[in-house]
Length: 271
Image (cartoon, rainbow, N blue to C red; front, top):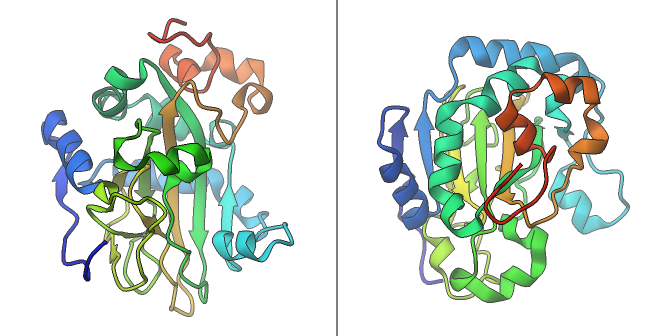
């Protein structure tokens, strides 16, 4: 890592060629895809999760101070999206572009991939900036391998409200996926905010340094949907076969069933 960051996050749209989007993720660590979800999809999804979000308590239950700082004192996280939202299970994770991007970025190396977690993350007023980190730290041995290590996944980070620097937009250090030392997570001055409208998505590599921003507003709740996708040889955060009822699982499109682990694990992704 050298100097301050002057890079920008590239912005594309749903019509941008898949190869161009994948190349931007490889080069910069992340890219913003504008208008990935329609306004109607955002509205319906937010309505479907609202009651569960209202019942969710902010912050972490663990006593560990590092964990508390990471999860945020006024940040809510809601999991088990398959159960909570019809829009999520029948549209968002069954979207052709969603799967085409996963295929382009992960399939050749991983052979098969699945969803390791999907969370609504809502940063409330007064929440401090999240510590910078790389998602591959969930599988700590990969940290020591640096940029030469295998791909451990990508994250689709959807804006469900406007993302501004003031309300806690996710901060990213473009190019940090190429730093030789992954123990180096950067300094607070280096990240740039992913400024987005509701429906836009930040697609980023598990190798890039990033973190939630500080919400310095007094009344705005920045809401996002985070979908983590990783090679299916890696254990996920959420054990969907234990969370999702068999009735719901049977109702899902086949590729969504596969995405959440209702299948066998083979290198080439056989179901």
